Amino acid sequence: MSPASALFNRAQAFSFPGAPSSRLPSSWILLWELPFWFIFIFGSLVPATMIPKDEWFGIPMKVSDAITLVSAAFYGTAGLIRFVLKPGISGAATIVMATLAMFGYGSLRLIGGPLEAEDLLAMGFALMLAASAPIQAAGILSMYSPVETKGFINRLVVFVALVSLVYTAESVFGLGLRSEASINLNSDFGIQRVRGPLYGSSTGYLLLLPALGWAIGSFFDENRKKSYAVLTTTILFSAYLGLGSRAALILLVVFMISNLIMLRRSKRSEATGFVLAGFCVCMGFLIYAQADTQRLTQFEDTHRRLTHETAANILVTEPVAASLLGQGYGAIWPWYRRDTLRTESIAHGDNIIATGFGASLYHSHSTLLELVIEFGLIGVCWLLFILIRTARLPLTKQASTSWRVFALAVLVSFCSFGFDLFIFKEVRVNSVWWIFLIASYQLPRATEMNEI
Image 1 (cartoon, helix red, strand yellow):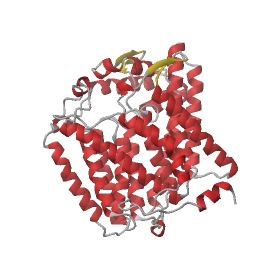
Image 2 (cartoon, helix red, strand yellow):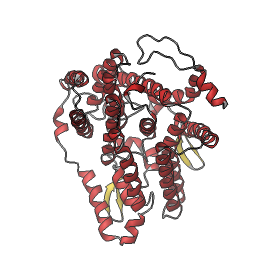
Image 3 (cartoon, one colour):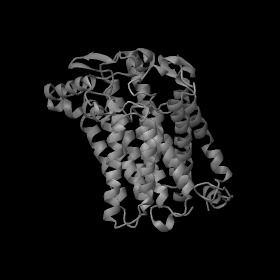
Image 4 (cartoon, one colour):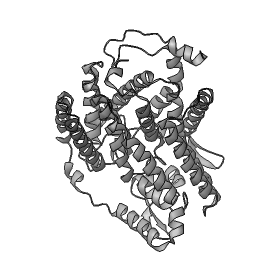
């Protein structure tokens, strides 16, 4: 028996009243997760204005981003050692390898691209940050069995809910945690839109939707306490609706409809979870009673339209071979330095650049556009591969209802790629989303495996 297996077998159970499971993680798990939780809490509660910034190797960066790379290196190295000692290609491993291969292609095109040295270094660093998210997620979960993975996701959802509770309370009640400049932003919603250091009002749905899917799925798991399900679902729903995001509402509708279809096809009569989810939606009206919902019905966005028109112009005017290869990472949208050095001006609307193909936002504001325009056929194939693999998860035979609800939430979260630039940007949001995605390949799926 290997030392790692012995550690797994010696994990001790402790009583933990009110927890989603009846066990506390053993000491080796607490030590293993400690760096992750430190970075997660730091990145969730410390405002960006209080994080030191400096220039290293000619690249302007935040200390938090440098720490993120160190964390990814630590967990990635441990995961690689684990893979060498116990080889085996899982579904999650193929997705991570495909993603790193795509990033490798982006690096090659970046080096041979048209960018000046400063932008080349900056965009290279941005690509390293993007790669750190799946590497860290795969590394953390590589040491866990399906049962231990479930325990980790339980803890992660609780922490996301607690952080979201703070953000929501600040937005609704004005606790004075934000600066005056921050309060004046996003003033078109009647109240302060829910946001914080971990996620913004226009990006939070990528990680909140899988967390919400896990919380709702808890209603269908007889081995998890309903108090956990009620509290996490209520908090996450309130935060989700408080984002004031049109994209978030679209994804929520798609998620709810897909779950109703799933329950009907599986001939399940369980409706408790969705009754309580409806109650949580009613809770959202407490937020919307103070908010101006008019912005949620206005879908016209001139700047995004210009960006899409520029992307279309690239596809029309460039040779077919160039479109298939892609323009090269950073060739159209070298966003990193502008995003880091001109954060305040961007927040106040200085976000338009001139490209050789027309006016555009300083980054694509769409993962789909990024993949199609700058990565070409490689980017499209990567997206289709990961999407098809994930789409199979909710169709797994003999899977429990709770797991299907979560799997559907992860699948629907891919729709976020059309609304903002994820995977390549927003490393904190991406880090949590990648954990949910990879965990969906490791979690126990059958009803009889629910108990942990």
